Image 1 (cartoon, one colour):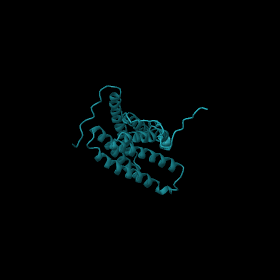
Image 2: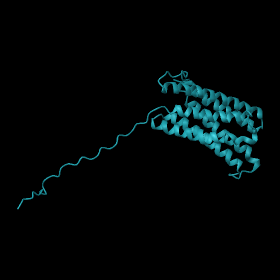
Image 3: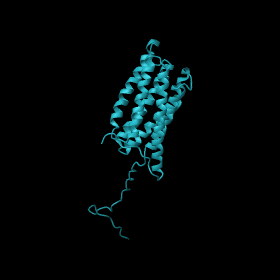
Image 4: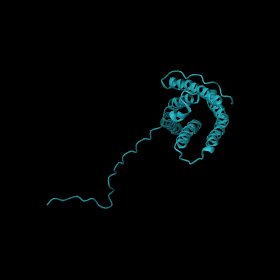
Length: 216
């Protein structure tokens, strides 16, 4: 009769190795390579409408780009920047995402009467939107004074365009509206320059000079 060895209760069980937890993947890259061109395309679409490339009746023609590309793309860029710990960059992209998305909702909502705004109040509703964002973008301009000057210039031109739109809206002045479109082309051009610099650095080249900050 063969003896069967039994493990006594006091004998410790052999250790079982637990599978190692997967290493966290750190966020990398530069969110500007997405955020800047996606900002530019929305800016160009808006500018073309403001300068009269399409008629006022087709004011919603830029919405597909502004909503589905610029708004969502900037939101992704903001999340990307936040994952990298780039607080102010995430703030800039996030604020512009809010601007473009809310602009889309405003235009679509007014065209479909979502908000039941009386026709007599539509003008001041639009002006209220423009004033609110002009104030926030003005504050953002001050917040960028320690960044390279090109970023301050971009946001500052956005403020100028909004101010022109405010007076153009309240006074039904198409000249001011077209001037705002020209300014919009200006900050779009600066956005293209900043994007090309970021793309050059991302592909192993030299970053473009963006100018010294206005405040040390």
